[in-house]
Amino acid sequence: MPRSLSQEIPKRQMERRSLTKKNLLITGRPGIGKTTLIMRIAEALKEFHPVGFFTREMRARGARDGFELISLDGRKAILSHRDAVGPYRMGKYGVDLDGFEGFLAKIPFFDSGTPLILLDEIGKMECLSRRFQSLMVEILGSEKTLIATVAVGGTAFMEGIKARKDVSLFEVTLQNRDTLHLEILSKLG
Image 1 (tube, one colour):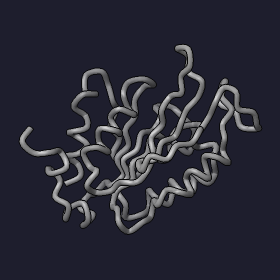
Image 2 (tube, one colour):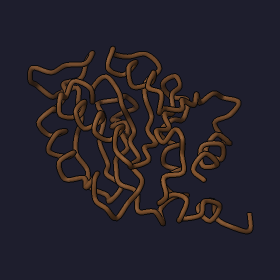
Image 3 (tube, one colour):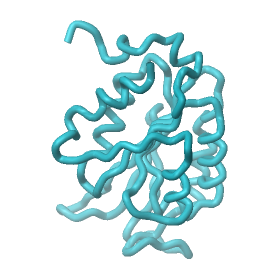
Image 4 (cartoon, one colour):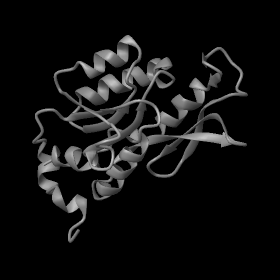
C-alpha cells in the first residue's frame, strides 16, 4: 500500500465533523476479533491522537483469570479478576469498579487536542459503573467521533446506545474481520 491508512482521511474533514453518524460501534460474538480490529483502527488513526482504552484477557496456565485495561497512552489497570473480592461480580470475576473509575478519570476524553475517542469495550462489566454510563452518554452527545466495541447482547443501557440515531453499527464476522477496518475508516472522511 503506497500510503498509510491514516493518509486516506484528510485531517480537516476529521476536524470539521463531516460525519452524519459520528458514533461508530463494532459488535460481534466473543473472540471474533473486535479488540484486534479496534487496535488496527487505533494504529491507522494515531496521527489524530485518539484517547481511550482497550481490554485484554489476563491468562495464566492457559486459563483466563480476568481482564486488564490498557489506555492508548500505555497505562494499565485491572478491570476484573477471578480472585478479586467485593460486591461487584460478573460470572466468576470480581469487578474492580473503583479501580475502573479511577482509570477512566485519567483519560483526557474531552481534551481539545483530539477529535477521536476509541473504546474497547462497552460491555456488561464496564456498564456496572454509573460513572462509565454517564461518560458514555456525554461522549455520544459530544462533538467527538467515537469508535467503540460493544457486546452483541447486553443490558438495556447497551441496547439503547446501539439504537441511537447517531450510531452506525458494524458486525465483525469471520468473513469480514480482516477488511472491516477499511470500511470503518472510509466512514470518517
